Length: 386
Image 1 (tube, helix red, strand yellow):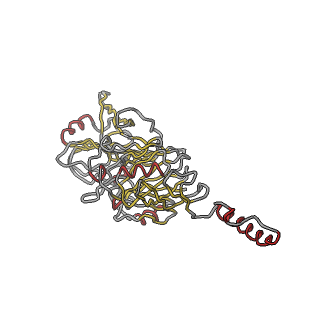
Image 2 (cartoon, rainbow, N blue to C red; image 1 turned 120 degrees about the vertical axis):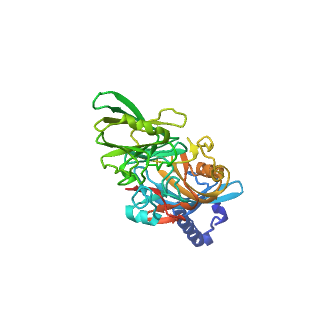
Image 3 (cartoon, rainbow, N blue to C red; image 1 turned 60 degrees about the vertical axis):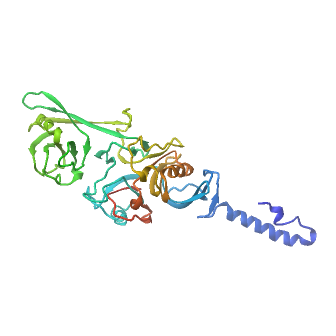
């Protein structure tokens, strides 16, 4: 602003008027220095084309609506900023795997300071089980072979990669001491009755499997307690159950009551390269990847996505990103293609970013208040506490 256009230099006869004008300018300057909720175009801390709230970075959860321009189009993006160090959690429906609940109910039950809808899930029929990878409290609770995942280490640092999880182990015969190998490529997923699968079930699944087909091995405290077939067996609180169906059924022959069982987990990226995720306590899968190291990195087909709503169509979107200071940004937009969504995240200043389940699942919570309301109940939610 040119101050000379507001007030001209005074003469002796207009000294009083000059002092009044100068006082007004000082007051204006004080107001402009910082006004909560004020918006500025292209601020020094924002990427070009983004309208952001003025002021210093918040030390607590904050929410704002940003207008992001891409060419001639302006997107209204609702964001929730989560300071680095807040504790992440994953909740499932009515606090049980394979159930759904409203986001409002989840917020009240958990006391979440911030939350976003989680990974894709079965929303159109059948049991509402998640599709993406989930790690909670350091335990792998669900696996997938597509997409990208965000993980949180014990010190609060977030990481992002095309996570793939390999589960395998050894079983030592109690009588002969002969050792055999075993593997499972799904966790807590209901197998098709006429398909082939090797699945591991943890206590999160519930008190029992929920189905009665395939061959089941019950392991408790590292020891085989039961080997059975065609039964809805109970899942021990201090163990797990392995189920083998179809062509994988013969693997159950390697287990006998009393045998010792070990399990190992290997983390890789989608190309099979080992990645350091051993200490990750919470992780949530989704995808595709939107931003990597500050640049757009969109390749949904390479991550295993085939649906038009991901590849080309516009839809309501949810996403999560890591900012340069290590804080987490959650965001939704009413409608965008995945290419536009990636560009939006770059302009939001994300160093890393990925897409989450969207459409009617898109939802955000900030300080206990729903700021983007989902159009349906959710299978899983990523939330943060102090």
